[in-house]
Amino acid sequence: MNNKIRNKKEFGDFQTPDYFAIQVCEKLKNIGINADSIIEPTCGVGAFVIASRKIFPDAEIFGYEINKDYVEILDNKLSSIGNTNIHIKQSDFFSTNWKENLSKINDKLLVIGNLPWVTNSTQGSLRSNNLPEKNNFLGFKGVDAITGKANFDISEWMLIENLSWFHNKNGTIAMLVKTAVARKIIAYAKKSNAHLINASIYKINAKELFNASVDACLMVLVFDQKSTPCYDCSVFDSLNTTDCTTIGHRDGLTISNLDDYNQLKNLLGSSSIKWRSGIKHDLSSVMELTRDERGYINGLGEYVDIEPDILYPLMKGSDIGSGNEWRNKFAIVTQKAIGMDTSYIREKYPKTWNYLLSHSEKLDARGSSIYKKNPRFSIFGVGDYSFKMWKIAICSLYKNLSFRLVEPIERKPVQFDDTVYFISFNSKEEAENAYSYLTSDSVQKILNSLIFWGDKRPIKASILNLLKWEDSENHH
Ligand SMILES: C[S@@+](CC[C@H](N)C(=O)[O-])C[C@H]1O[C@@H](n2cnc3c(N)ncnc32)[C@H](O)[C@@H]1O
Image (tube, rainbow, N blue to C red; front, side, top):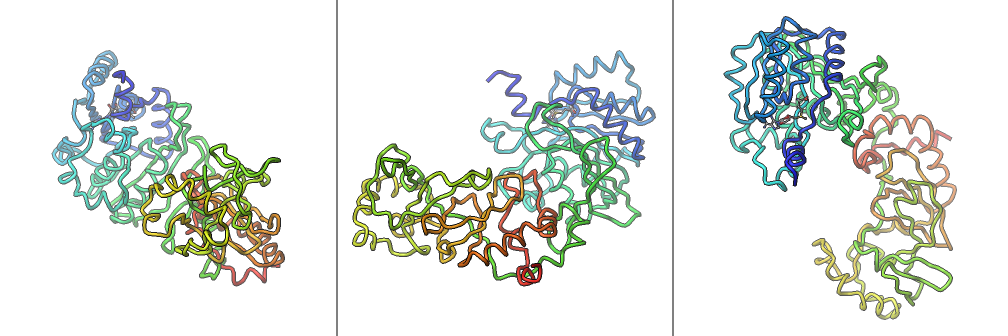
């Protein structure tokens, strides 16, 4: 790998364009942020150091950067524009003695910049050392609690350290970060009772600025020891707009639009209707067939002669999400319920059994351990609900809340793959009523107020299951 690319990957190296660093500092000034001291903890070639100098001329500025070539470039730039009150140091964030550095710094502190954009797993694959010592950096417990998973951005670690600087100082953190990271940090601030009094997210165009396809923002967190903390966050679509929505935490939920949530939360409650995901079989080349004029063909290009009884029409997540019609696809549904004995297929549907046997090597080798503990040729995501005739489905991977009413095909209930969530009904009337409830303005609004569209799988069963159905009858 060439050095520059490796640098980019290992050190999450995306230098901020000078003009944009100026725009950010101007924005901060416009919203009333001021600073006596400024820290740029991973300053690179110094876009934010130079912009801060320009917009906050009286502040003392401290910049740190791991890459000594960058430090040299910045030193050169500064010696030509004047470097009074600016201190740049080559330093690894994770071994910098922040406590000592901060003891010399007074209110108001502004921590500004753009931390490395890299996850620990990318670093793992590069065998990089650019990670904190797990056992002595901030105590792993705190980090674990916020990430809750193995893959996280190293900027999360850095930001948790940044937060701790405001335990007894007033000031602001203004960082360009992934929006998902910003949300996690604000949640962490709440959990750790940080003296956060105002949080904002200004969306930025990371594609245009950094050629990175990621949902990113300028996160601005204002800390004040004396005021009452508030962990709600205003979300602006750009640096230039004043319209915003407010996200926050209520009733144990993370809300993407507090106004809508407060207005419509009476639509949430316990419910007997449960959203399910579609069938999981982990071998579409064998378990899924397409019908053409010659018969059923599998994903390996083989025409397959089997009894049609346990074949069910199949719609994939992409069909549901993109509004496509059924494409003559079928799934072999070997069980009516999880764990059901499959040996009945041998007696009742010998051709199907032989087909499955002829691909048993692949079927028996399916990776997940759930297959090992269950009857041969098992599938998952089946139950009574799979066999009700009428269904309402939505694809979890698509970025819109469009439900599909799916009617039976060839007198059989349609099945889905496991990227789809659905509910099912015995009668057309029930399904139509439910569909008009789900597509009503108020239900769309309350669900939207719980969805974060920047997430990879924005539509979650846990969100859909919050909807109360008992009152839905009154709706019509
Ligand atoms: C996304 S770039 C942004 C640079 C600069 N803040 C800016 O806004 O242009 C991240 C910077 O972090 C530096 N970096 C990566 N790991 C670091 C570490 N452990 N300590 C200090 N700097 C680090 C990289 O060399 C890179 O310059």
